[in-house]
Image (cartoon, rainbow over all chains, first blue to last red; front, side, top):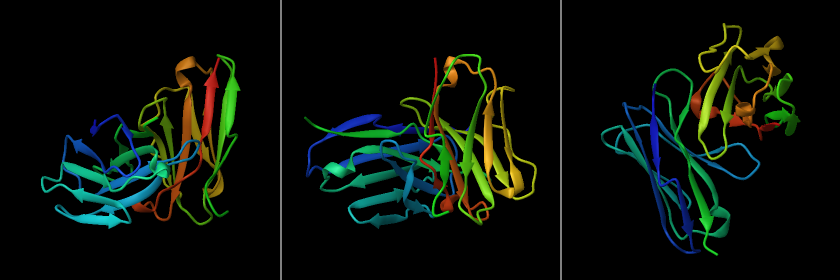
Length: 110
Length: 114
């Protein structure tokens, strides 16, 4: 079946640092989505990408749709404590079901 | 309602018992999805309802799992003879017309099988 490989699996951040994560798929996507999940909540959509090469921002978040259509990247600039949570990439290979990556857990450095 | 509502928020059950998880989607949303999230894992698709069409059950892991959607609104996910590996967060989402970008997730039901 469809597989999405998301990395890193987890990372510690210090307030003010920039953060990068990426996702690769085994097949071509026509849509890439990035979600964030806070503890005890369902995922919430952050950014949707529809075209190869597309670069879209949402505040301090920037996501890119890779030109091969098999990868996507999410960057968070100048991180703040409320950025902690789990970030998921997702995409529909066909139809209406989302396939999710394994998630990147962002934590604050002690 | 304003959002997707799931109940209960937490459920602890004994191995071998049956459980029912409820999802109340956003009013007017015709598509409803169930996903499972095991500890530290991504989301695993279980089942998809769209309007009056036959549901897509391709993600259900075994015949102990079933789901129904009554009147095109509320959905119930039933797990029979629960096993410890069924422990997970079960997330429901709905969307208007099945558009993937329009997914709204509920807060999930955390199921623990002891």
